[in-house]
Each structure stands twice: as structure tokens, then as C-alpha cells.
Image 1 (cartoon, rainbow, N blue to C red):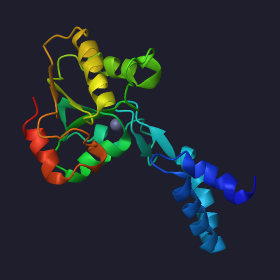
Image 2 (tube, rainbow, N blue to C red; image 1 turned 45 degrees about the horizontal axis):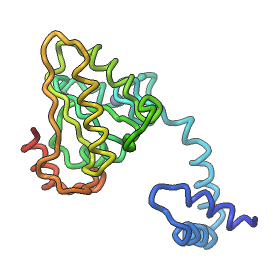
Image 3 (cartoon, protein in one colour; image 1 turned 90 degrees about the horizontal axis):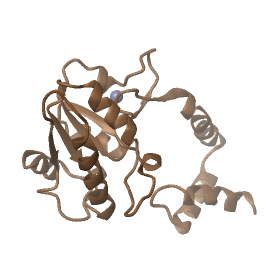
Length: 203
Ligand SMILES: [Zn+2]
């Protein structure tokens, strides 16, 4: 296999990228100058060294201090009584961009396919349940901010079941963004109005 095909094979592994797009990326890189390629390659090499996973919400964040928590989790102005569970970092970033949610987050790291035999391996369910236990008493509401597709709904059911098993001092309300979202909606691409409506009408 030549370098073009080899590199294309990597791009095919990216979410939503097919063989033709992958080739287009490679051809784009071929037209760039050496400086561009050098910096691009360096950034990829550095990525894992410069980024950590937040101990509380499990999102990726750039290491700027010695803290084990990201900026959102460290911000004393965020409302600790609300926790929004999302599938991936891109969902969280989109909701932050809209900007009217002031609670905390938890990133699951994926969704559960129907009939998944080992949910533990697919999503960070253990970490989520530990976090809920740790916040015992201070947490009043958990919003399940999952996309409306079969995997999203399957995950929603599983999470609801698991969260209800956690014994807490005061009951935690579990809500979803379901109403106001249409089927197939991806949280990652949600526009401001749709999110605000879904958030207002959560139930
Ligand atoms: Zn965090």
C-alpha cells in the first residue's frame, strides 16, 4: 500500500468519513507546504500529552494547571444541583456554545447499541453512578441529554434504571430533553432555539 492509501485508511476511521472524503483529505494535505504538514503532525503527536480526562465529568480538557478537573467542574458559579449526562464531548461543547445551561455535566463516552451485553465496557456507567453517590444530597436533577435515535433511547432506558438503584438522601429527579427534539436529532448539531426549547420543556 502506498502512502496515499495508507493515510486515507486512517481518515476512513474518523466519524462520518467515507473513502472518497478520506482521499480528498489526503490530496488536500499534498497541496500544503511542509510547514503546515510539520505542525499538523506535531499537534497529533502532542495531543495525548496536552490533554487530560476530567476526574469529575470525564470530558477531555487541555492541561493548563495541575488540577485534575476541567474549567467547568472547577467553576464555583456553576449550579451543582443539576447534572446533564451527554454521550460525547462534541455534545457538551455544543450545549456550552448555546450558553444557557449553567449546571454540571457528565460525558458517557458513547451510547449503548440495542442488546449490548457489556454496558460497562461501552459507556462510563460505573463512573457516573460513583459521581451520583459522591454528590449525595447536593444533586437534585439529572438531565439525560441524549440524541433521539434507537441507541440514544436504549441508553436512556438503561441509565434511568441504573440511576434509580442508587440510594440517595433525597430523591433525584430524572428528566430528558426528549420533548421538543424530533426523531434522529443529534445533540452535537442542535441549534440554539431547538436546544432552548428542549431544555425548557424537559420532563
Ligand atoms: Zn469536568
